[in-house]
Image (cartoon, rainbow, N blue to C red):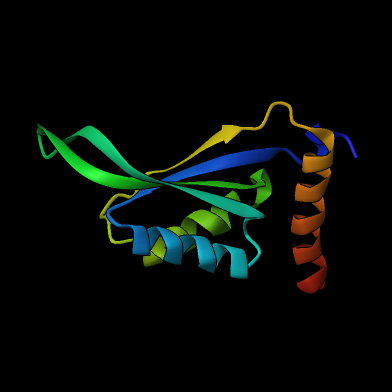
Amino acid sequence: MKQNEKPFIIVLVTTSNREEAEKIARTLLTEKLIACANIISPVHSLFWWQNKIDEAQEHIILMKTRKDLFNKLAEKVKAIHSYQIPEIITLPIVEGFKPYIKWLDKVLNDSLREEGK
């Protein structure tokens, strides 16, 4: 398999607390929409909100998945996230350690087989 056949991405989501970050990560893992997640916390965020600069202590989830799973993943995150407009953004995985990329592919392809695709 060539990496560009099934492009892999990293999805970043911020949450207001660690419990919410863990709930999102576990839900997406259970539904096999991601292969793994890392929670980084706390982080100090500064941002524009309601016409002023705001700040908050947040928690970042870094999740690895395939690009074709993003829409389902984003819908699921939005459904369970507490923010009105949650940050759900992606970064491409341009290159990676081949055994790790093969593992990502296997985990995420196993989810396709379980769905009967």
